[in-house]
Length: 139
Image (cartoon, rainbow, N blue to C red; front, side, top):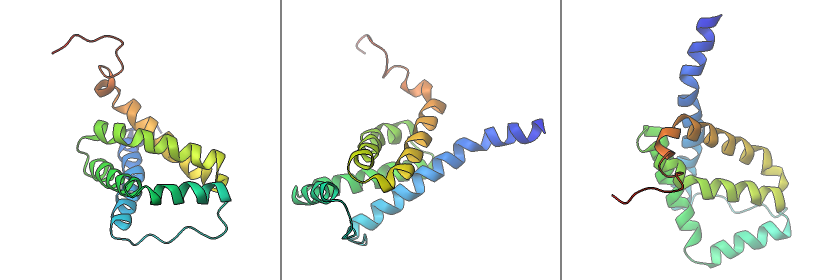
């Protein structure tokens, strides 16, 4: 039984990386290619207004899609994982808050994504050590 536990803990970071990276990679590609469906008509008014404002900005949805694409690609390819996680942090926090305050039906999925990303950040905590230091000397 001990072998199974060690094996699972050894592969869980890979599974978490793919569970976060693949959907983001696909969402980024679909968004940039214009393949995402329009929001449902049953969306609450606040959520609909927020998404409309993002679209009217002319750049914010493209920025989100490019960020999803690049971060998803980094996670899936296991390249620049700490950078991908840092790029995703604002998006994931905003996604959680969007679902918490404006559209609660997506809250469980947003919470799982954030939890997996936090787990991955913990796995790569050494890369964030200097970023989170209160004072660092200039290079």
